[in-house]
Length: 403
Image (cartoon, rainbow, N blue to C red; front, side):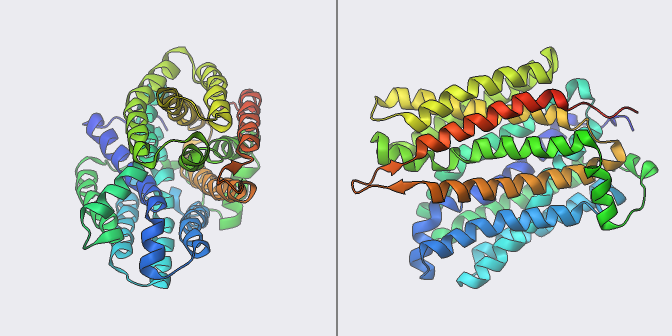
């Protein structure tokens, strides 16, 4: 199936980017709310960790289950239903007052949120020609980059701006944003049924195995594990390392994230254009190699001037997520059209598991000494660089299926 022409392509990409943004933001805004949740719900740090991890693992499980049915329906009604349920689950997170009810709400939000990324990437591959797909992926992925760097300050700002609502406020705000995006999706998302002409009815296990038997697709799943671990081993713990080891004041952290977020809005589109013009594999190689430098510096630096820290963080958040732009522009061409939704669902599941595993691993490797400094973050940086270099080696093994 060739890519389908759609009207108002810019509005469609804007809507998809916004929906992708809300999914990632829903996960990221939990991180700065830890102290308030612990105090308000009378829970400990381990229970707060459960609230974080249950989202990613629920998303992974739902993505695996979705691989059975996602290619059997028109993309439009299925995506609208999934996003509507995600909006309701997010609003429920703001309404509950109990730890266990919040856990249930987070599991549901993760279950529906995990499907959003896979379906967004699938829809882009359905409607955008391969020659322009890098730019499209860059526009949508800029939402991913911005949500990573903006999630912490947005969560803190909303929770502090309405003291009466406290930690509930970010979820109410996110629910309202989801409602607006749902209306835009109803308006601009076209019916996508071309993949149904090649659909083959298989059992759940056979459907997954039909993907895993293809060498390129199996390597692609390994690729995303390495790429995701190489990023999420480092980026979620940057704030803690900067305040503990580099001497950056907590009041300066939002300005770092703001500058990095603005930079990624421009860099994501630029990387997408370069990938389309010069080749996604070639540009990926340069971006991945360049990303090793800020990763090494970010995990090795001691007390240095603030502007150097700022420049390195900007480079880090431009290049580390920038690798995914080139990768996704290339990987979406690998599966056959009637397998694309299934593959992207498995891709999302593997990515979520990798996020959970990498953050879990880093949190158990890092230790604090008597003076409050983090130990072993340099080890994590070297391991992240190793994974990044491994993806460069693996990339040539990925090639589109022959028709």
